[in-house]
Image: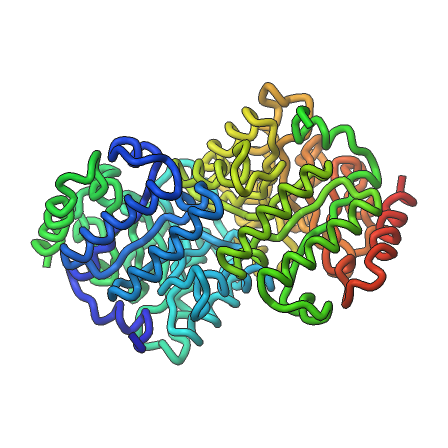
Length: 279
Length: 279
């Protein structure tokens, strides 16, 4: 796989962009009859990855918090999961939401984007409370290594609104500012022709509340978690995102995991069918 | 150590609050003559912790990004470092800057605050781009387990200003909003009488730019990284923080690490002396 994350993402269209989240919640492990430890977490992840591959899925998004809670062995399980999934041809977006400044941010970028590192993914999510500019070391490393970065812009939880809708000195909302700062950088060589740099916008987010109209987001890849289980069906994707829909990576997690491993192949197929019907 | 982080912090006064950062930067490892791997990182951390203890330091703050970049074995080194330091009586503030929502945030809280977990610290730092309310699972667990949480409010890097100074619908700056949301929660039982919940404000931050006057911050514990190496001497602590100074946890990292392990005891003593002279 010598081509970059951005180039590979840009080659995926319509239903091929459906991303399956790997979210080993304690409640999911329990309902699956698995132990709430690193072994149970690893077993859950293996079953979901197998079902994703069997169902023609090309992108997965492990929620790192749910591996980190299992300690060192949980991080080891995550490392094995990501390397095995990448060897099998999946694109792995590590949902780590890291953010910091300077050499600390560079440390996170090395952890998740450096070739040969234990936690090497194809792309990572990042948080810009310290400014999109503070994520520069991750953008540089991503550009060098052919990786991707998705910066949190607007989220669907009600507590996020006050901060993300606040008005900057230039009159933008915080979420708008994040998107425009990301959009400016996404045209940088050598990956300017591909979708290596994007934003995260929750599937159930009311974009108008954050003044994130279509023009602000035009051409920006959008990772959109929360389809399926948070009250928004994949069928609503094109209603929610309109002309931006082709740039969206819709993500389903809980509704794929369900309450047991039984039927997971069918749940993946059903979701794939829903997205397929849109295009 | 059955008493809570907040109670133990509240029992520390003046120079006893000096916190030593454990920041195994690649450049520091190199100048110390250590390998840029988990072993070198662990050796650096051991020397700094020994020097801290020898110098009467009570608080340390490992920068987690610089362990995470060393992969699974780096996280194992961090786990050993934190448990050994805690056994030796130090209070450990894990500088992880985690942020997310719901069960994911709960996962991070379990990783860093749960009793007996691999990464158990006494307190953690967190980021509230998704709202202070999204950190509720960490506050709850901290209150139950006698741990601490410090939420990023205002930072000294120039790229952070646009977002942190943005104006919310209520007319506060984002940084103010974070501080007031934290202050509201910090009075919660069973730790209302102690400093279990605070904010992070960079040592070199111009607070007026973020409208973080003394009244907003009154009574809120302030973790203040960046003394020593970013152009602000510990001698300026009381000038910078005025009447709030007693609530500040000043943190020194690079100026303690220096360019080699030689002289680290003296560097710790010198910093301790600087804070001592203030009180």
